[in-house]
Length: 323
Image 1 (cartoon, rainbow, N blue to C red):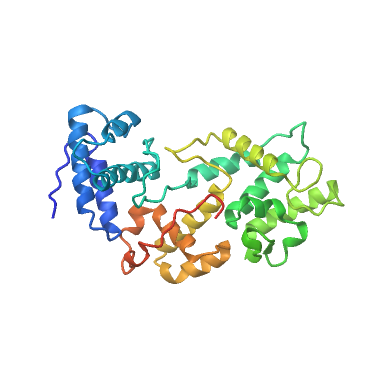
Image 2 (cartoon, rainbow, N blue to C red; image 1 turned 180 degrees about the vertical axis):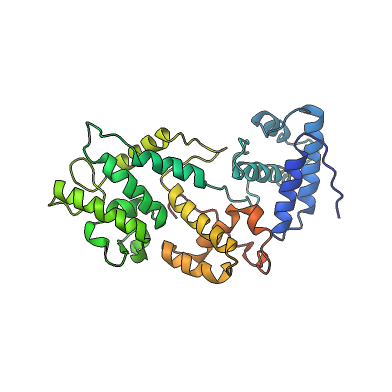
């Protein structure tokens, strides 16, 4: 077994990364050797560097005269995964571009913190009337809450009709989305009450429209308008990118799943038995897409007793933006 002794300014982060991989059942012996070699390189070339920069990674990634292709791929893959790990934790770390395959760790998308969500919704709740749209300040607080509370894909929110929301029982019908699949979800009582007041207003403004979330003309919101409204609210609430992760419309969906799993863990529930239900609720086409969210909270889930991560090590996919 390799004896670890990291000595550069990155040593604590390197040790944390190795422990993270081992918590997921990986021996990670040869990769630890590569990381120790990288640590010695940093100590010699960048003794004061406390972050993973493009300069140091690219300098490290130059192939050595005595190095074969397999050894080179193994070496740079370790540093690519280390960069993704740091970015996952919110650091502004350089990630070596993909191009050479080596079993990359999934790149984590942006997940809202409770504080950032509160900032976002506080801004939407206090938006001023816009001369270009008389309904923008009405739509934003409700639509984005539906996206978060129900884990919706952006297109699912845009396609919603007023008749899809049952104000009596909170049942929400999600129309054909990915792979023409429909489903039913349930909104929390507070969101149903908010939707009830919202619907009364927009129905009085556009009584002939069927759209739940409307643009300034009472039509279903377009993708561009949706994106513009999100960016406006994000900037207004002061939310910025975290490392290499940029907040986007899918961040509400990712945050919904991550926060739900976090709550289950805090409540001491059996996450393994609950994940299939979450998969159905979110309309995932593959169960593996739901398992992907276990990566989002490494410090929390590395200590989960009785959960066999190794059984999922070969099927945790890198999920595309629209899953």
